[in-house]
Image 1 (spheres, helix red, strand yellow):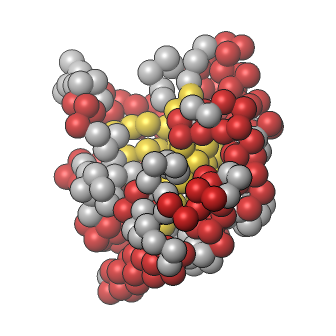
Image 2 (image 1 turned 180 degrees about the vertical axis):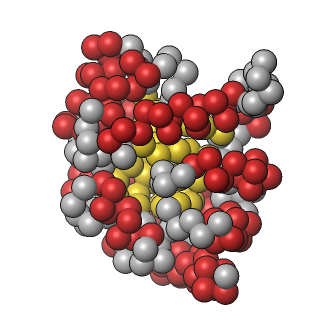
Image 3 (image 1 turned 180 degrees about the horizontal axis):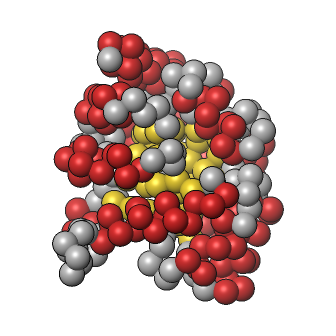
Length: 271
């Protein structure tokens, strides 16, 4: 299956929760520390208890890169645990010029085998084109992020009266010649989401920020539902994977994602 087929099969089936594997050894249940690779065991339990309810898994490279070769090995082994029909996203926020970007693309897509990646657009089209050349992959490009620092650049107003992030969305629409572009749009920016959702057209949208950062699952889902747009996935990391730190955390995680999906489904079916 292509990346686009994977995400469409989940979202058309009513599954919109992306699980962020921001796995931190300081925060995982202590009983897992007895394993030779506690992070891998943590990821394994999460995947085994959520894969039927998840639309995607997003692996945040920072949490693995800090451990060097051991961390990269954990990424490889985690990828082997994820079923083939579930989208995998490398949250690596790449974007550089020339051969550098080409090497990054080969790393993410060829070496690690991810279906999708997060990219930043601020070095322009040539910094992203090596990724966009992979026609069967997906590229989630940062538009408006969930952090407060988004105001520093993304929400700066241009001479034409538009915000920089709106200009990015326009550009990504232009770049989407292979239908393999998507957007990252912060769930904490609900007013901006309501005002700009029509500009997304048919591109899939990855929305971080629900849970610990304060974004509302209900508000995001309702906004997409009102616009008859089902092409979205909502990332939840800490609020889900650290919902319990006891030896029963597998049960708690399974219960938590089912609750998220129940809330989401009730909104979608009511519209």
